[in-house]
Amino acid sequence: MAIKTIKNAKNLYGKKVLLRTDLNVPIKKGKIQDNYKIEQQLATIKFLLDKHCRVVLITHLGRPVPGKYDEKYSVKPIAKALGKLIGKNIIVVEEINEFEAGKKISKAKYGDIIMLENVRFEVGEEKNNRSLAKNLAKLGEVYVNDAFAVSHRAHASVSAIKDYLPSYAGLLLEKEIVNLDKALHPQKPLITVIGGSKISTKITLARNLEKKSAHLLVGGALANNFLLACGYEVGKSMVDKESIAFAKKFKSKKIVLPVDVVVSNRASGGEVKVKRVNSVSKGDYIFDIGPETIRLYSHFIKKAATIIWNGPMGKFEEAHFKYGTMSIARVVASRSKGRAFGVVGGGETVEALQKTNMFEYVDWVSTGGGAMLAYLGKEEMPGLDGII
Image 1: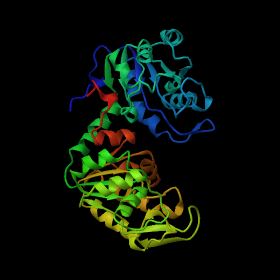
Image 2 (image 1 turned 180 degrees about the horizontal axis):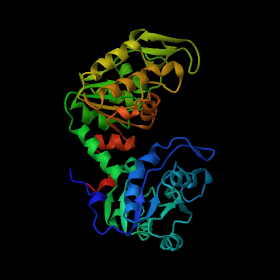
Image 3 (image 1 turned 60 degrees about the vertical axis):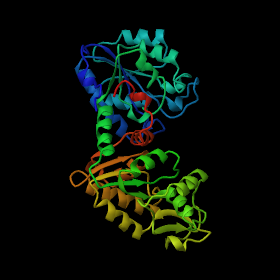
């Protein structure tokens, strides 16, 4: 696949480059809890600095109310953390409008980094407003999208802005596309592991990859819907009507469901037991896959040549219900980089993988959850239009 990458851009030296990043990281009391997304952006930033570019960073953070400044969602802690990692003082421009921002950016020297305040403070960002996109474009001479995680969104700083500037893919975005394309054109057998809560975000992924997969291993609350659709009792476990309706229609011999589960008689706390799926009672809450299911799923994963995993196997945040997710994380990591090509994505899935200390053994850990699902499901990706 041809990718219009920043590596092939001509006459880049000294240019003002608008770099759309995804620095949407967890922050508590002004301190960043996880630097992973920031570290993933460093390669493109350093590449541009080596070209003596003046780098103008654009990012979002959380879901603030558009049109209203909220210090809770300010990018200032991110600018400080990134500055430490890269050894530069990063100036945050609070007013994103053509005159004020343009004046400060014009004073920047070659090799300087400037960060615009949270782009989601702007009313037109999530509406893909062309006026906002045009004003942003006036702040630079080249646009680079390195924010794969929001490239499935039709937002002004991701989509419309490309109509006003020469546009390229950043180094991280390029890697995302190259590695996810390997998963879309897999060496067989392909084993797909899907977990999490709702099917609504994963319908297109399931339909697209079912054709290519030897097996789809289903876990998490998602499995409850399939079990219920098959006539099993799931007690008080999490289910949703949309997922149940899809599970009833989506008939495939490739789907593998849990054979045993870990349950509790309370929503929190309570007595924890392992039960066969045909022994779950009306008062039970299913919170994890059981040991027999872990063995079954591991058996399939160990035979894979390509593995795609998105979504935890249960309520892994709690000690009693972490074993299914952590076990799958370990077997996916141990199989990857050699015997199989492993791709993992989704916030909670990545978090679980990090806890195993086997993160580096997986071939590709995507920075995008919803974007990864959209790309593998062959949905529209507005942020990639004109770049690939």
